[in-house]
Image: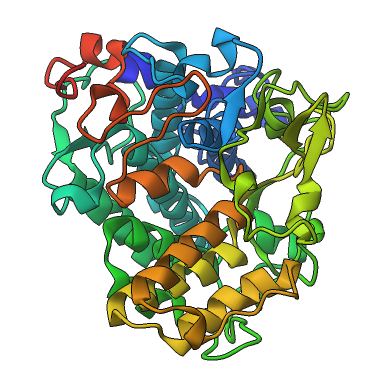
Length: 479
């Protein structure tokens, strides 16, 4: 494991030495693990480095979202380019496939950054308050990383309450070779660690950060709570979704968070993309001209067919765009741009040289998580669940207003909420996780086959490199 995914602390810094060190200077481009935490400035850079580890191109810089979306029914591959996730789209990945190996490597490198940070903070020369805050940020990022991995490489928790094999659970820092061998913990163990990290993060993160930008791009209390609603929904623990969401969602419309950062839906869906820091943007990874995900990684490259994008994936005519209930006057239809007779998602419009932020958590998702959880937990056409659904739909389509009487059964309501998720969260990484948590099969799309939940391609295989170096790790059945 360490041989493959070692975090090189030295790559994060360029340092200087004082006059008293002139006879024994520290190498200007390298810092050992002995002095990486030597000053408050270096510690802060390590914290920022933990965020950077998660937002790399092979992880949250774009590829992870694309993997999760193109496995679902919404997109058609247009370029037949093996470099840009063709095998993921067509359900033809193997343990040696680049995307399978690169995501694992990027995610475990990010996890190791968090582990190193958590350990180093224990003796860092900073205040106790900063130690608590920085540790909580690392726990949030570690939770996000493990949750992201388990949704692709392991069976869904809802299949058997998490008794399936999950991931190697690495919680201690790796700063040298060795210690590769580690068994796969169960899916339940992984989710428990994710929740434990998020609970600790909720307790110890600040209620808010200093600016709107920091409230969007660095974790605070409500960020951890919002992610918990997603995680518990994936586990099918609907009562827990309600408990968490109620901390940041008011009892009635207009829905807002009453403590911490004041989250609410932005007045217009068009305002939540780009480099947005609206009250709806609970957590996003920022990018700039000096900080890009890299060529063929960014979301604009995959989905945008204009001069700034690559037009790799068009919208499938049989996907959600064919839904008759998604009206042509709905503002979200404006993101679907017709090019050469095919529709492409243009939520991201900035060039790859200065990319848009990547929206990881939006308040709209939290409202839909809560709506679905209420309907399932109460097994009724609950008026609050309907109101939450209306708040998301009404923001973009004021002509459609649902009422309790709109739904003959609770399943009708749940089906509408799931449809709303497909519309609202299109191209934001929710397609595959939603299909898997609900125990559904992947449908045919274009030339890509249907994949049943019993098929070996339903899960990604454990990467070949992990199996070569970790002798205790076993492959997913059938791969």
